[in-house]
Amino acid sequence: MAKDNKIQMPSGQGGLTSFSGESTTKFQMSPHWIIIMCAIVVLLIIGLNFLLNGWLGTV
Image (cartoon, rainbow, N blue to C red; front, side, top):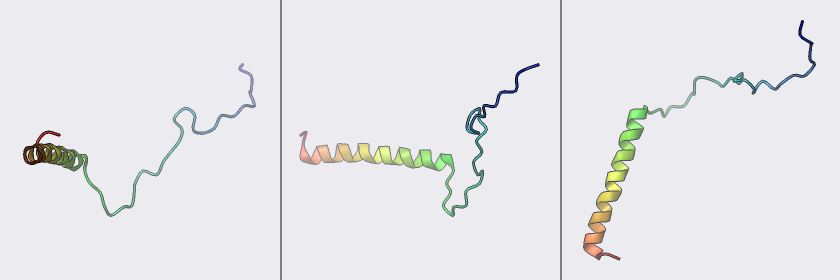
């Protein structure tokens, strides 16, 4: 029979930590909208880069 060790590990060890599953925020977005918004920002930055380099010249 195994020895009865008196050592206790914290509950965070072994994936035993639990978090509240639901958040109660009024502002929720799906991951699809986040990806779409990031793509729009990237395209906007690229467009502004071409536009401003055309007006200001290469710096």
